[in-house]
Amino acid sequence: MKARFLTPLPVQDRPAERAGHFALIASVGFYSLKTGREHTAQAGFVTNYVTGRKLLVVRRIVQDKMNPAAVIHDLLYETGAVSRALADAVFLEAMLVLGVASWRAYAAYAAVRICGWQFYRPASSAGIVAE
Image (cartoon, rainbow, N blue to C red; front, side, top):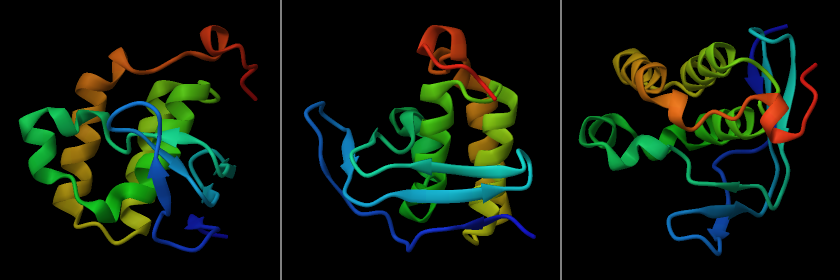
C-alpha cells in the first residue's frame, strides 16, 4: 500500500464566516504511510489552507496544487491527533503525492517546521484523545 488521496481532487470549498477561511463542500481523505492510517477532513471542515501564506517567503512557494495537502495538515494541527512533527511529515508526504515540485514541498515543509508551533493544538487542548 502507498500514500494516496482517497477523494477526488481538487478541493471544493465555499467562503466561511471567518475572513480568509473556507468550508469544504466535499470531504478530503488521505492515507498516510507516516501514520499508517487514513485522515479525512469532512465536508464543512474550515481551513485556510496554508496559514503561512501571510509570510512573504511562504506566499512565494505555496501553490493551489498544495491545497489538498494543506487541508490534511490543518486537520492534524487542529485536532492534535498526531504530534506536530508527524503532522508536518504527513504534509510533506501529501505534497509529494500530489506531484508538488520537491523544492516547493521541502520549502513549505521547512516553513511549517519553523513557524507551525504557533498554530498547533495538542490533543489535550483540542479536547481530543490522540490514537
